Length: 112
Length: 115
Image 1 (cartoon, rainbow over the protein chains, first blue to last red):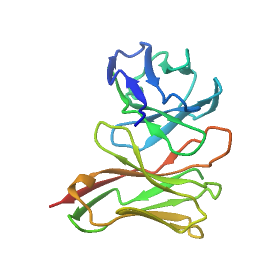
Image 2: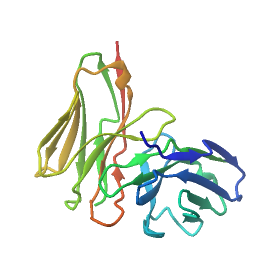
Image 3: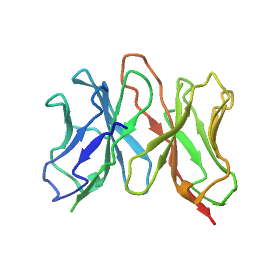
């Protein structure tokens, strides 16, 4: 079964540092997303991406965040200057032309 | 108005029993209601989903009941098994053709099935 692959699985970074979280969506999917989940809380939408541009972003997705699809396979989330409150699980997801998200296993980001 | 409220927060059910998790929404534009199962350290995995044109959908031991007038939907897990122990999230979305559709998640229910 096709998978969404995320790397790294765990990233520890110092406050103020830049991090890039990487995702390889399912190859024939058209829509790409980032969600985050603070420990023990619900999954929250960050941003959606379609046709090489952002479709929608949440209030969480401020100027410190950016997304990019640098080639035909990767989809990245960059946090420019990390804060302690950015510590969370970050999930990448993709969908095809029809419903049914596939989520990756996530990257646990720990900001110290 | 974008919220999805989920209850209970946690649930303990004996093996073989029925697990019931409830969700309520406010935004009447929502037209896709999936349930996700999440094991520790893993991403949410789609379990079952329903559109508002039907009141019930069953897949194996999992059933979604949908009440459009009350703006509520629920997940029933029949013959619950220890392997069902996980966190369950309801979600809702507006499925626009040709554009990405974000999911709004409920707060999650931690289910524990005991022997």
